[in-house]
Length: 107
Length: 118
Image (tube, rainbow over all chains, first blue to last red; front, top):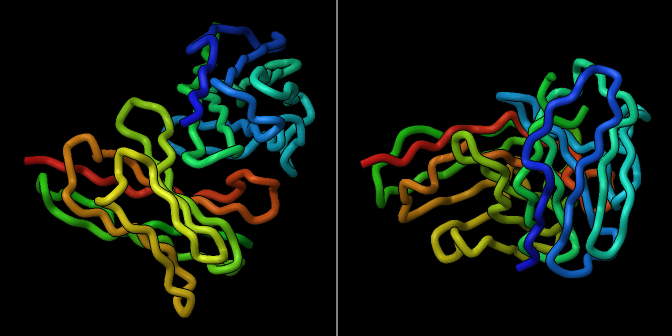
């Protein structure tokens, strides 16, 4: 199985900050990498698919990059509604494993 | 509008069985990749199972041999039949679908809580 490792597991940031979350795969997954946002008590929401494609309706302050084993999710200017937990997921092979999550908290 | 509504969760004893349902609207279950993802209390997301449009099914190692994913085309509904339940199966179970995105789950239900207790 492909292991997905996210870092950091949590971070504190202020509104307006630029935030970067890293996701590493245990083997090459090409660009089969997705990012989800989860608010407390809610279902996950797709933000980015295929490493860098923005899902319809998602604000442009979110961006994704990377290929192979190393990926990043960047929020260019953190907004109050962005405080949530973010997960990466590989869709290269089954089981389609998730990273452990990164909780973005208010500083 | 695409909508997924899970049901069937609840409290079950260790070793028991439960069937979760996911009623879909706005798209055809049999034409899309469908998946179950779970989240134990306070923990991260865990991929559980999936069924492709062609009918092929896949399972995570933790549920293989105990859970079965299926669909009823006439009801446009996805199911997860869970047997030999363990305490570690306690989680919110989400139904999710790949509708338009490339190899990603772009539509999710609200989740249903399964609690396994002795």
